[in-house]
Image 1: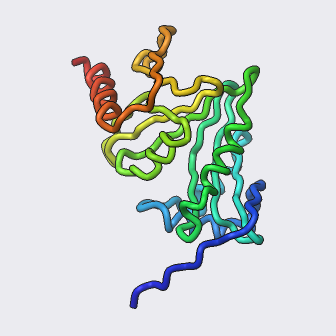
Image 2 (image 1 turned 90 degrees about the vertical axis):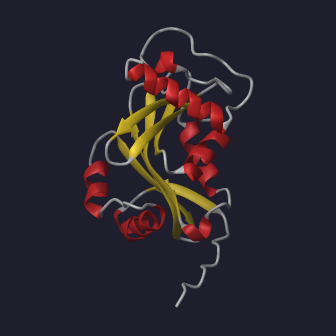
Amino acid sequence: MAKKPKKPQRGELHIRWMIQRDMPEVLEIERENYEYPWPGEDFHLLLRQANCIGMVATINGKVVGFMIYELYKTKIDVVNFAIADDSCCLGYGRKMLLVLKSKLGPSRRTRLNWRVAETNLPVQLFLRKNGFNLFRVDSTDEQGDIYCFAYERGVGNRILSEYAAYGTTAEPRVHDRALTSDEIKLLGDQLKGKRDGV
């Protein structure tokens, strides 16, 4: 028998610190969203780190999304982020992302980093729509390539080129428009070629 679709959660969104009693709902959302979900122990180990923060988005007391990120001196790395299936496409992910962007400032952290599997096209499109740009492609044996996206405060639609990916001080190229999917693929191929010595 097919599952009955859940009714979308509606109401005012609240974003707060993640607490222990949120974990069952967080783990359920994790299982809904990922082919290889994290087990509860992974969440607990990560959240014990001093620089790691977990937050949940709630509506009427029900957890509809979560984000886990690591704070560093000049950047924030998003480690895990998911929205419940019954709350997708209602703008909650964008609102959660605005909370992360609000933590950036000119005299402190200026950049958000986000690593995405090449097979996770919905998240790649979500990031592009919200001002993130591809700046590096990492190869792994297990999952295929990992696309590294970044959002920099006050940069606008800047594309971090292969120069930034390899740690040089050269100024990244600036484009006045978003990259097309073909351009993203081409940039990824260029980065792979540089890394492989081609």
